[in-house]
Length: 210
View 1 (tube, rainbow, N blue to C red):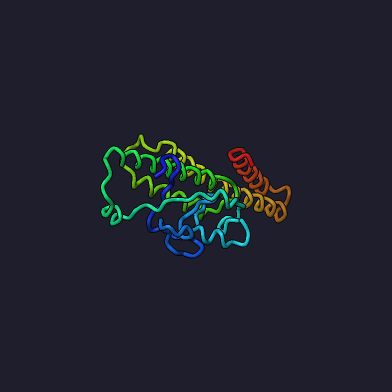
View 2: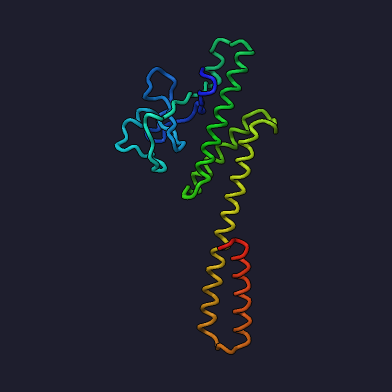
């Protein structure tokens, strides 16, 4: 183990290109590697790509900067291994948890940017939630990751609300345009409808700074 540098992934994880499970064996081709965008593939598939672009998000990456990850031992493997000294094992586990929390924090920063699909953002949020649930129930642990998760969820909720309000604003503008075209200009009813629509449009624009 290399404290401060080793990252781990779940033993059931598999490569998104070849769909084969990852391995910690001496065959580096089957070992998981994370590229700069945060996506993970086996080294063999990364080397077989015709261009240095991520197959999932199409971002460019430097193959020389791909970071090798470690596949977490399954419960059966852990039981078969020779027990470590309690103090040593505790230090190693703390280092692994800290590194993986940092890795998840990096992935969340990537999906917070513009142009990331809702599906990909939801996958990262789900992954972070599942990992946090697997950790000891201590509200004081992984505080930066918990805060980032809360902020990302609130940001996405505001994005959805903003999109809904923008759609409503467009609908009201169309309705106002149709009202102006289809009713007499001097009609009191028409003027009241137009004033109401304009008021609602201004309210939405002020709320969301469109």
